[in-house]
Amino acid sequence: MISFRDNIVFLLAKAHQRAQGVLKAYLQAFGLTPMQCLFMEALWEEDGLSVGEIGRRIALDTATLAGVLDRMVTAEWVRRETDQVDGRVTRVYLTEKAREAFPGLASAIEVTNNELLNNFSLEEKLLFKRFLRDVKD
Image (cartoon, rainbow, N blue to C red; front, side):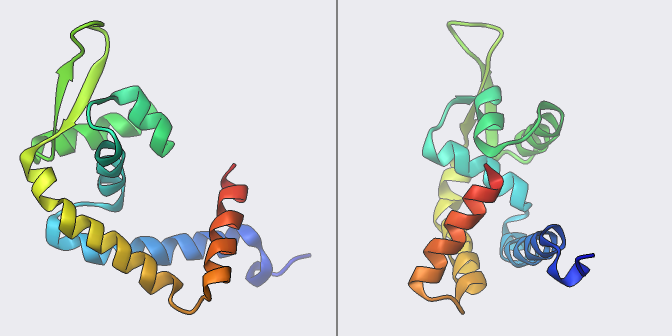
């Protein structure tokens, strides 16, 4: 039997826990959670996405996405609008507050990545990211 110390599920869970903790500490000044930041990252790439498209891009189910969206609207990070062509679709847009916070949030993400990967060579960083993508897919 594989020891839990060598169990890939355990190792990934602990790595995830550490990564979330590091990012969470940097996001605390903004009052955002890592999930809320990820939500906004999708909109930084393309503002005005539908709720469904955001869910697909960040791999989040509709029920979880609805709660995240509600909290972000309440905190005035994003606003939602009914699509003018298809009234069944809700589109989400960044607010001015979110746009102004972008440089600080982008820095927090970069510092987090650097902190987590600082012991890796460039080749190891590239391989690590590739391996994580392969496991994810």
